[in-house]
Image (cartoon, rainbow, N blue to C red; front, side):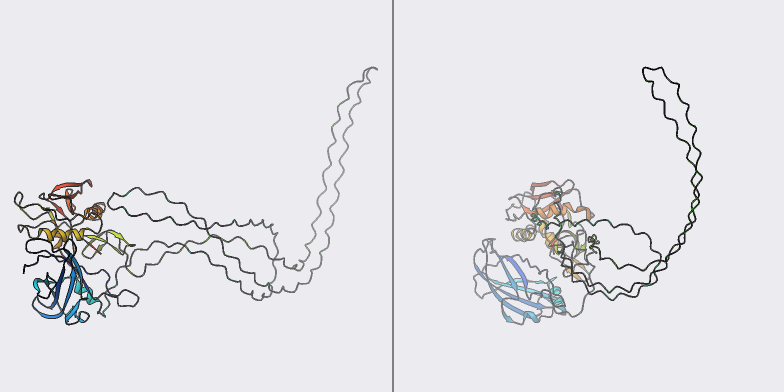
Length: 501
């Protein structure tokens, strides 16, 4: 039987168990993906194969804690995917494995004919997966995470109808009335304008796959406010208090003395008689005599006692509703934590988020190499091949990396871009983060746009995992953002690994 060459691409699902109800349960399974080839390097495509998975405790040859078999059909690229823990059990129970008791090792065996004559493909220590599955059975609460960034304000709901006004309480006894000042006339209340209905929200545009960030679009106009709820009925007025006794009218004051009449003015002189015939011009009117001075005003009489209060007038119309107060600060978002660009998280630093910050991409803090080739071979000796790692979009980097390693293998033994990312891991707080990969064309461009939140980036070219052809692959100039698609795979360039969450 020919031995099968394969590449393991195991990934732990991002949803971990939480100790309280209402959240998703940790799945009792581990995703496993591989590409099957025969010893000649040919793909085992579109064929049923049999697999046997054995989990050992402590060491690669330790006690078997679980074993199962699975049958799966490869696709046209020899790729297949299964979930360890969901096959046919041979021994042990996957759900009762004690992940906290020590290291766990996965042994993979395969029969390319779909039978039960298995060939050992090797044993590898599991790194991150046991920590996630142990979390499903742990009763010890971990330290509280940092409060997530404040979520965006949700759309305001429509105002509810105003409740019915309560019955007015009994009117208390009137206190002693003070002197009443003159009341100014009330201005007429203007009528409230009718509020329009809210405009519909515009559709959300799709995220462009790789292009640079465009200019911000013009903000849409705000929709008109919704109509106010109906005013509740007025409560019943309280009973008026008894009127007080009228006060005695005060006496009139003495009239002042009339002033002395002024003297008459002097009469004007009569004009001379004119000659008979044409009448002469009328003489000018004489000036009025000076008016006499007014007499002094008499002393004002005493103010009469204040009369009893008149009956209260009817209540005035209800005034217009005052402006709405400023909305309070939105509380921290519940449920899953919200992550932001530049946050230190899971072994690196966040440079891209989606799903309101619940998911995104993380880049390593520093470069994994400042000078490394895209393929494993000596210039002019090894033969370039097209590995079919053609994915360009966000999310393609992990698959590209797996395909490249399956195609290139060890080569001449020298390291290369995809392999150095795949083998990179970092340990923080006792947790190993090892599922790193070479970014795709679009993922590398996103990293370039957020390079200011990192330190240590070179101004030279960085390799992507997106292949162009037999001898070339995409790379990006981190000095000016130029994407080059004619880079010879034997060139030496920088590499920065990323991972998803």
